[in-house]
Amino acid sequence: MGAVGRILLIVVVIVLVVAGVGYFLLPSSASRTETINVERPAQTVFARLASTPAGTSLGQGVTLTEITSAENDTVVGNVTFAEGETGRVTYTVTPEGEGASVRVRLEQSVGANPMARFSAIGGGPVAPLMEGATTALSTDLNVLPTADFGGLQYSVVQVEERPFFYIQNCSPTDAEAVKSVVTDSLLALRPIMTRHNLQIAGPPIAYEPRVENNEYCYRIGYPYTGEPPRVLAVGSAGTLPGGTQLRMVYTGTEEEVWDQIYNPMDALLAAAHLDDPATNTDDWANYEVYHDDPGQAGGSRNREIFYVVDGDINALTRAVPPVAAAEAPVAATAPAADPAAEAAPETPEEPAEPEAAGAAEAPAEGAEAPATP
Image 1 (cartoon, rainbow, N blue to C red):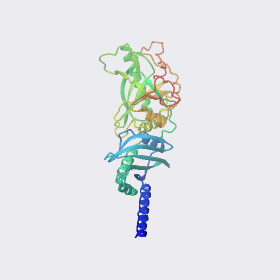
Image 2: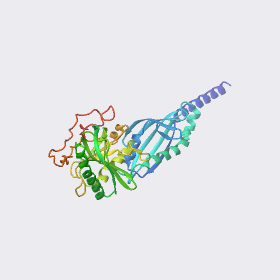
Image 3: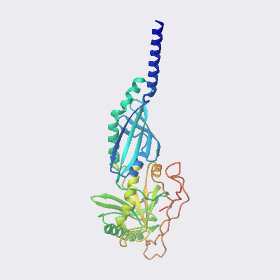
Image 4: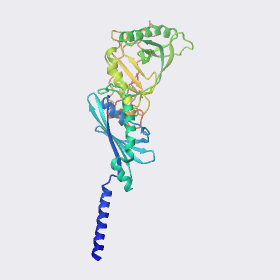
């Protein structure tokens, strides 16, 4: 009997050792990996994922708590699940032609329970959540603009609010029509400003278009000094927006400005969660400052373009760091409100170097002090 007992004891010990080893070999987290393809540039997809705000729902029962790292085409974030469990999500972005593939890995900690660890082998509680998570991700990414923002150069600036006298007008979308509406609006404004003793205080400006009935609609006019009239049959007295803005310098024709500036910037703003393409209702969010004659053939070739932005500006600067601010174009002499006046309009000065725009940390190394338009 003693020998039998020893054998049983050895068997029990072996079973316990095997069980113990098996326990530690079981996964401590349940995970599932899926891959989706999207017809958007890989750079845009990576920026969108890297700037996902805390609290974003990634699918039913999965909420992002924070992005912990975003580098080398991989984004990692912490998540919580409906019952309070914690885990993480990992996105790996790979270029696929003109689009991208995204490998999504969702993980949930399962704790020390042996049965929970055993169920994790097949994905456990994560498995039924993956379909909703990948569907939500695909939907979000496929509403992004298709433009590529690679090579786009901008700086982050602080701009002071200023009085603005303007006419609101619409035109067809071709370059000649745009040039005509800008020229005609400025010609109509100058005698009105003279009559009301309003002095032009800078180059002409056009808020860039809101689309109505397949036409571009603008607010075109001048910054000014003087007492705004109480009643106007033509023209309006308003303000140019101030605050944190994105500034770009453009030298080219009207036909090329959309491909060179607007389409890439819209793609960057959407990728950085600063402009949701599915819900955007912000009308007058960007404007142009003309430093030459906007009525010349092909439109202005010497302009600054400003975007007024809200939200976490650092999400954008992490996606595409700003460059050293380009020199402002040399301002052409704008027509005076009084046609007989010989003095050139007041030219805005460069402000002192601002604090970091929109956040406590500087947007990026190399950004210079901004120029007020």
